[in-house]
Image 1 (cartoon, one colour):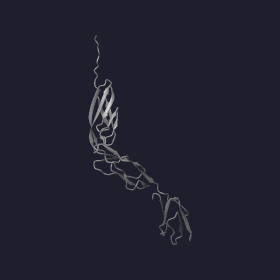
Image 2 (spheres, helix red, strand yellow):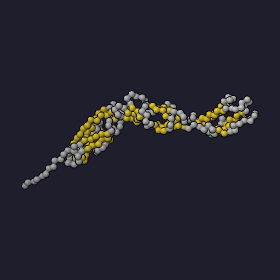
Image 3 (cartoon, one colour):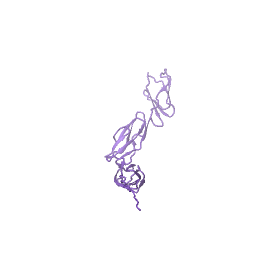
Image 4 (cartoon, helix red, strand yellow):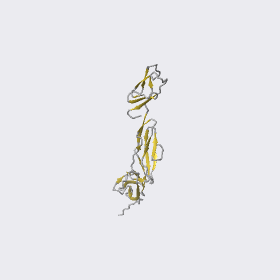
Length: 239
């Protein structure tokens, strides 16, 4: 008897893969995307002991010296059971060292003041603040969240943890009271800022200084006018 069998010759999966972002940086996830014809199985070997089955894995390289290269292998299998292997060398570039934002005048400032936010000035690094500034330090006068991205010559970036700047309003320096004094009399002036503040009444004419909320201004012989300066300070923030 005679048997006839048809054997189909199937092409290999003809596989390839890409990696993003480029460059691949230390400690930052890279996404591997495979391609091929009629592929049903994807097997990845990242060259550092890690493997993955499936397409589109993310992998983070952590070379001990911060920079290295790894042979990444993709093995694919198509519906016919044919296998293809592609190997690419992936260079791992260093990322900028971690840094923190410092503030010259603290992160809480009074209205009208400023503080300088800064990170280390390292040659070869590019700086980009969320304000658009491209210097290692910026001067800020308004409340808000501030962050900076450090990028080295290899194109690897590190986003420094953001900081919050608060601006405290200045206290109310208004007062009530009769601005007139009769002969040999006095008048009482009262600051309106309320509790939580310190007060300083300075009589520029007589030199008298009073540090209470109320100031009893006495008659001053020979002085038709008395010039009085009131300073109110927020006890919590010194504004």
